Amino acid sequence: MPGLLLVAAVAGSFGCEAPRHRDGDNVRCANIEQSIRLQGIDAPEMPGSCRPGRTCTPGDPYAARDYLRGLTQGHTLACTREDVDRYGRIIARCSVDGVDLSCAMIAAGHAVPRYAELDCDGQPGAPTVPAQAPAAVPAPPAQPLAAPTSATPPSPLVAFGWLALINLLAYAAFAFDKARARSLWKTRLPERWLLALAALGGSAGAWAAMVQLRHKLGLTRFVGRLAAITAAQAGLLLALLWR
Image (cartoon, rainbow, N blue to C red):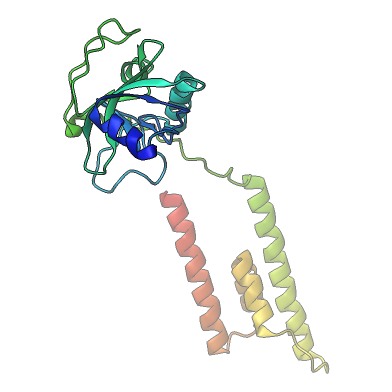
């Protein structure tokens, strides 16, 4: 029985029972083995279905599919075979209650004319539409770029407050370490702690303590590391001022 229905479909007119749809220009019938493509239109492709190098129709594929489904649900379509494409699908003009589905999809804005000329005279909202070459399908409209969002910069008062605090801590740490060096206490502050305070913004306090207290000025390696930290901070400050 399915074979006879297939022969009838290929031969000319046929009815499509219980139609269902994968997208806005495709029909599957319960009584026809082959898939049917509506003649003369191209609807938006589902995500991942647009082949590389092909200009696909812009639009919402789900809205196109659902609109076509609303036209056909609960109806038997009256179809006329026009051709068979290279994928083995039947190319057909199908209608329901006298409404041509290809013309209705174009009139609703869910498909564009393509591949074949459509005579939509008398169809609701759809005049005679010439076929378009594939390359003439309009490209998707460019979407306006959203204005970049930038984080709110910290208040200058907060920055100045942090710098004042970290430089006082750096000066106090150097002074504490100097006092330990003069006493009998053997435990000193690790150099990495002093350098960390400088790296966090306390370079000025560190240099002030070193010069005024005459502390660690003779340690070439330590002075070199502190100088490198200060140079990096100065470079960052200049870059921010330049921007």
